[in-house]
Length: 542
Image (cartoon, rainbow, N blue to C red; front, side, top):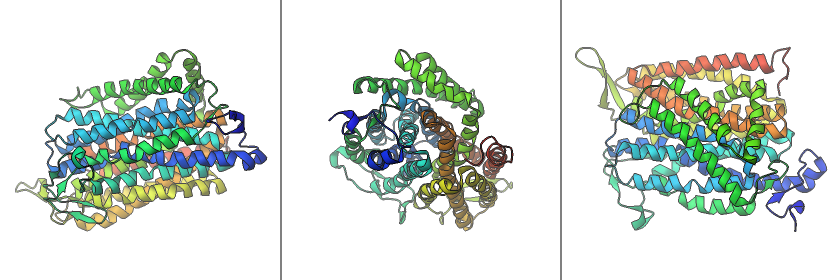
């Protein structure tokens, strides 16, 4: 049977806006690709986000690194994943959906196995773990290609629902990782291959309670565990997904497509490594750049490298994708997507270590009245018991946000959740300030967690609303790259939040980080109203 009959991997005839075609042919193909895409994306998020949990356990196991050094691991993973999304935004057109999702899923095996090996060697230098964190960024990049791909399969009237399902259920990778990793660390599930356990020197935990000090712990399983799902998933992507020839007309054979993907992904590591070298303090880097200079530099370098290094037919494809930057709505939606996904992934990365540092110690003044934060709190809540709740709620509610937005319009939903996030972020800051000045910080923990759940829920709903808005504003050729691009910039939240919160904790003013986020959300309220809700707006509540 040929491709036109839709039995092969390449689909040439694709008309999802034609209702008769959609009901007879399109729906089956689209939903099959969606249901395979979701678990592949889930594993991508799990591998990308695993350093938020690994760093907590490295602290509990006595790895010879300081808290600021451990914060750099989550930040490196965050910025690598964000930078990888820039080329990933363009991969579907250049290489095809099936080819891209298969290879980028298979690529996750490298950081998963490499991290498992490195974690068996606490004596290895910090740069080895930083390299593994950088490599884990491949999982972050997968979101942009996954969303770009799924957006091409569904009609405009279902964009919010389909993209909400893909992103929302895919984002369960964060929650899955936060639940699975603490559990598999307590089990010698890989026998001799899995290596020897290390003994906990501090209490740890998982979703059902504490894991006491002295427990044998296979921290290396944090990486190895994902191999069990990645191998069958890669096979499923290869045999079950499709390339849409109307979207990806010049992919070439699979080997050529794989070459394009590998080439562009490899290029993305160059600006990440260069920027991190300029940004990170000695001995890892030079410590020359402020974060707010480093991030724009990283983005600009990634785009320049893509434009300069692309060649042959790939150069023409990249040039066509770059046309999205001439549209002002690309930029407005980029900022609004930072509010939603940037907050979700940033708080997911920063929350476990923030709980450990703020609530894990008693904060008492010394003889001179200077506040000290080094005495262990015997009543401390375990970060690994609670940190998963916020990302779980945010991911679970995301498809609901897409569904509501399909009914009432995306921008009105974005406006409501932005207002909620202003209030919740300011309130979290106040509670953090109270906890960080208390000898019994645990008394503030319940309020702290509930407010963070509100933040995660609002960000999840807002993810669905911004997907809907992008799907309506842009045509089918541009919506995918715009989704990928906005998700790339927003993913820098995974770098910004750990750095900002970590720096403010170190300065003794953790509340200032959350107050700063609240101000940003308030400014985005005005932006969203101006572009999409005021009376004279060019596009009304898309």
